[in-house]
Image (cartoon, rainbow, N blue to C red):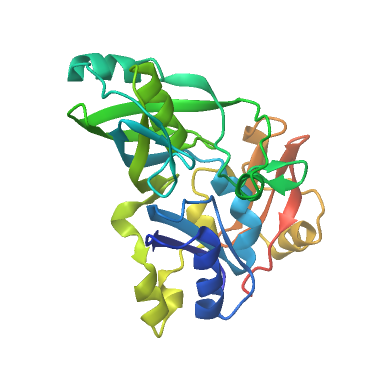
Length: 294
């Protein structure tokens, strides 16, 4: 079985825990997630199964949308409610309009220092392991992109936001930074991922339903369907197909109209994904080949 399942992750488990459960559901070790979601968070977690695990990199790059609640007055070691309080401050005195103006300062490309309790590695060690051992390390800020912040609720004690952001953004860090910009402090108390690329909360499948289903394959979305935003070239005959699955360059239909170096997919006329590659000299050069029909 090959495909992507849009899982509704419950609170209280890691993304790796979900992967482990789906390995049992789909009876294969070839299972991988497309972007870590905090243990306490809920929401969209696309999981790749079978040959689709080779597509993970194309989904992790996608934008994401979150609904988050931040509570003012305290910072914690983990930047969420699971950590120990490290700083206590006065609540912000801003009006809602003033708070909205602060959030607008964070729109665009910003520099963000990832939290110590994260899976980012320093000298080969995940930061969260170093944090648990009490080891302090300097973390370099990284550029992340915030496309939009909607203030859904604000009452000086807490705020609810909807955040549309690029890859690598830590929402709990954003909450802390926003509060500091308001002259206060905060930590995240709730996080729901509403979307990850084209995968949305409206069609996410609860993990419990997948575990209880006798036909979990019905929830798998086809690999080619999930790559619809990627340019495609069409393979029109068996000889062309054989060349591509053997890693050979092929002047497939549509290749001539794509720019040099374009990353694209090669598909059959029936819509089966054969390969992902690049355009070189108006021909498709496969980089990743898939076993069509298996």
